[in-house]
Length: 243
Image (cartoon, rainbow, N blue to C red):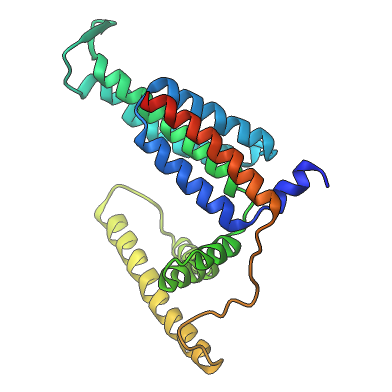
C-alpha cells in the first residue's frame, strides 16, 4: 500500500493526540530558531499529507489577518530596553521579537492542525474525542452543534429575507440598530423553540443522555511508526531548545 493511502488510514486518536502535543510544545517554546524549525516541520507535514493550499486559503487568511493586527501593533506599544528607529517611529526590539514568536507559533500550529486534522470529518473528530475519554457532555455538545448549526443558519437566512421583503436596509440610525437587535433576539427564540422540538423527538426515540459508540477505532503498526517518528522530531527540537 502506498504512503498516501497509509496516511489516510491513520487512527483518528493518533492524529488528535499528536496535533494537541505539537500545539502544546509550540506554545511553550520561546526560541526563534526552534519555532522556525517547527514551522518547517508543519510545512513538511502539509506536503506529506498532500494538503491543497486553495482548500484552506480562506482559513489561513482569517488566522493570519487576526494575528497580523497584534504583530503590527506590538513593536509600537510594548515597552522595552532597546529601541529601533523606523521611518521616524520608535520600535521596541522586545516587541519585534515577541511579534515574530506569535507569528511563527500561530502559523506552525495552524499548518500542523490542517495537515493532521484537515481531512477529518467533524463527526469523526468527535468520535475520536469520545474514545480519548473526553467528557461525553462536551462530545454531545460538539455533535449537536455540527448537526444543527446549519439549521440555525437557515433560520437566520429566513429572517433576513423577511426583513428585506419589508424594505429593510442597513443604515447608521437607531432603527437599524433596533432591528438588528430584534433579529438576534428572534434567532435565540427560534433556537430555543427548535431545541425543545429536538429534545422531545430524541426522547421519543429512546435517547437516555448518551450516544452509543457503534464502531471503534483500531491502532495499526503504521500508527506506531508514524507516532514514533513524529515524537522523535519533537524530541530533537525540544532537546535543542533546552540546551
